[in-house]
Structure formats: C-alpha cells, structure tokens
Image 1 (cartoon, one colour):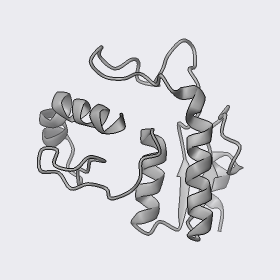
Image 2: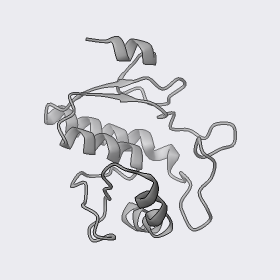
Image 3: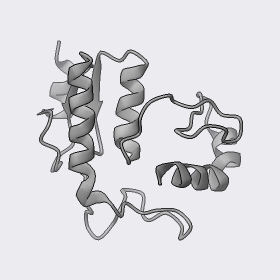
Length: 138
C-alpha cells in the first residue's frame, strides 16, 4: 500500500519538489519518475522508512522529531491533512508495531543509536530526551 501512496504523492508533488528542494530526491518505490529508490524497507509508514533509510546510509545516531504517532488536536499531520487523493495517517494505531519491527531489525544489524526527542510521543522503544539533551549527547 505504501508503494501506491508513495506513487500518488510523487504524482501530485514531483514538480514542486524538483523546483523547490535542492537536495537529493528518493522514493520507496521503483521506477517512479526516474528517482532512485531508498533500497530500505519502509515498515508501512514514512517515518519508519526514513529511519531505515538513514540507517542504510550509515547514520550512527538518529534524533527523532515529530514522531508523536498520534492524531493531535484533531489533525493527522502537523501540516494538516493531505488532499483527498492521498492518505492521512489512517494506520496510526498500528505504527508502534511497525516501529517495533524496525527496532528488531536495527538491533539484529547493530544499527544506529536512536533518540526520541518528540514531546508526547507514543513511541517508547527508544530513549526519550529533550532536543537540547539529544543534540548535546556524546
């Protein structure tokens, strides 16, 4: 399902992403607009996919921001809902298990240290710290 959602997102935003973002563009799907695939498992949500991609690229420490894993203030995302043709965090109740699968994979493969600096996060897998503590940690 994420592959279809990923494709739908690119269909809607490829022009603006290419025009407004100067970094490298990746997709979790193969063959989408000629973009390279992350080559990382997505674990059925973009946040977990981003962690897996960073780990695959050799990150030693990952600091999570915005990983509340809940609908907050009636919103599904900090930026408001996606347009109707895109998904809006409908599986949020399942995300903790998706992250748990990612955590098991990372531990088996001696993955990076992960620090959750998201206030009010539902994720309890990783150590929680304030952002200033996470940034100052050795």
